[in-house]
Image 1 (tube, rainbow over the protein chains, first blue to last red):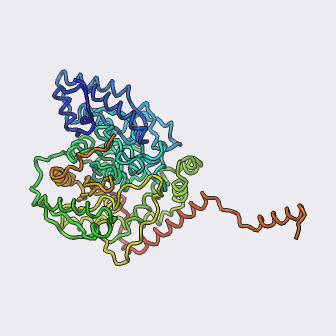
Image 2: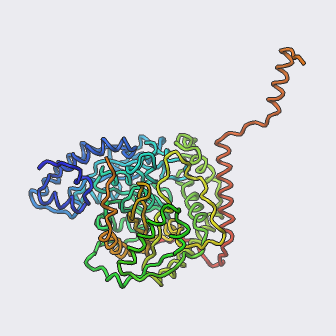
Image 3: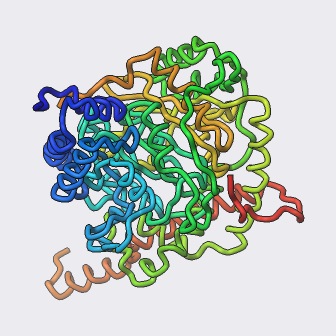
Length: 475
Length: 61
């Protein structure tokens, strides 16, 4: 059966798999349709690093062969997907989004891609990213080998970073789902800016073997997809122990919606100041409506605020200390000046001067912070906060432009959840929750370590009551 | 007052020499990054850490 219309490009991974399994289309037809769209719209959005057309179509034929002999490999079989270009795949360049690595080729696949390949998902291309996942601190959206990644909802705006192409690719219907990575905000931000669902897993749950390292103690790989359910299924496929990743937690993940507790069992923390004062004024109405939907699910709501730590300085110091070691050769050789953002190059150079004492102080404070978060989550199962305080920036705007100064007496709230959650290694789920001036807005649920199933259960209930995740940009 | 070409050249060069050299933009940005690291250090220094607290090296969920 031929594929017609656009619906197929905005179907969930679960539905794409179901259609293939039922025989509505072959995997080859589906893959070809997605490849055509990715190769057309990807470059238009600076979202595509490299198409894998030839290998993807070969894989698709193999997957169709599986169906003939009824060899079913799970709910991602036959689904075309894309991967952030920091994940290695043999024979093809893995550029890390940066000119000095434009011709880099690895022999072995990243563990996560190998796992998805084994499940019968079809890798159709590598997706664009902010160079070096933003290490050093970039000023402009154009800090990428492929240029600024344009938001499918409005090309004058950025897709977010650093998993930019993964966000734009899913939002634009160019891939059935994508993998991104997060050190501090790189899944949640493009998920929120592009109006998709993004899951940052617990630190150590997903192997980083074969992925570019930016910070050994902060990096995580996670799914970016259309629904919370897709994220759960993808996480199940990519999670698990891996001897190639020294920080692997040695845990598996089983997506188990059938065992979800009643919503009334969950307590969700929130801070009124997030929604009334921290969020940009134009987003507040949409965000408050989303908070009311969370309430309507039946969960218990509890006012709270983050433990008091200098989250931004801590995450910056740890990231700089580790990145300056990881990219030592790039910096000392002078090739760092080839990257596309002068501020980022300068940040990497300066990071080399960070003292061991400063790094260790940050890591000692991090020990305290982790203990504080264990206490924080004694009183609640998860917290909810705006994913980002505003909508996607215009592409030409400097990303480090200072925000309007907050009143000194403004409460802390939960607005610092991105650096806080990454320092503590906690899982978080960003859900689309509305639009402001045609641009998506999202909320984030964050919970204690290894409680992804709880976040996904609440996320699923939220998406059962809303249609924001089903909206699609005009092609 | 009229200046001869030679006098004009001397005056112009003199003005140019008196100007402070324009710093390299890259150098300015490195200095800005250093300032940011210093601010981070100062913010972190405010957190009191007991001598027994070890760094979060073993960091597994």
